[in-house]
Length: 230
Image (cartoon, rainbow, N blue to C red):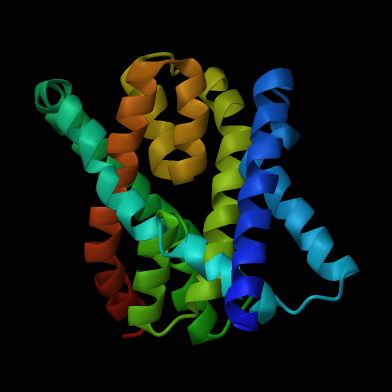
């Protein structure tokens, strides 16, 4: 009973903090108030100040984590809604997403090689540009560390969320498809959240990009690992 109560407490605490930071973000629209970024920081501070072990927090945090799988499956909805736009622009969309996945994996490999990471860490960083549940699964299957892979995904997502809009403006990418594909491929869920601020079409294309990136990444991950470890 104690385990269940403790798990429920941390699950409710996480949701409450997220809702609070989300309401603040919707009111003030400041980047640092992004609910994922802000709630993560607040929870980290609570754990450090309260000297609460990560495993203890994850009694409830894992409940929320189990919802990531169905959330990814739900991404098929915007994919279906935008099927006409997808088929009309199939070649540039698919080639853009595929290129983004390859570049994302290659940049991770180059980063790990530069700092001489171990083989386990290289395989952990490899799927950093995929959405969290897929990245964790890919990292685990390849011999990496799933929980650490989630951290790298968050770093990639936060970076894309903060830097992405400025980079798109600098490159003069102003079409809905271009913005959506760029944000969704590079920053997955965080990028899609940012795309919603541009408009529904950008958000839909970002969802499509995040979904297809997960598919391409799951297929290319083992190939990249095999080539890397030859």
